[in-house]
Length: 62
Picture: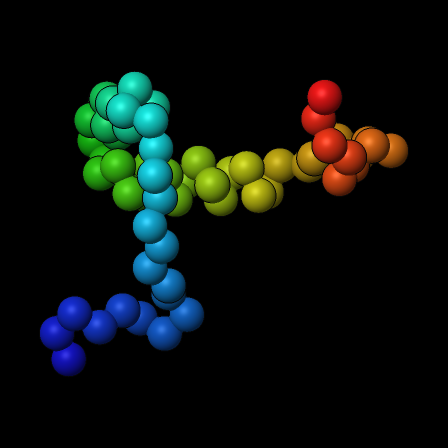
C-alpha cells in the first residue's frame, strides 16, 4: 500500500538549528547520500560506540 513504512520503522520529527542542518546537508552531499541516510548512520554509530560511565550519571548539570 502507498505511503506505508516497513514494519518496525517509526517516523519521528526532529528540530535542529539551521546551522547544524546545513552542516549535515553539506556532509551528506560530499558523501553522496541523502541527509536522512547520514543522520541514520551518525545515530547508529553513536549507539554502537561505548559510552563513558560516570558516578554523576543522571545528575543535573550546573
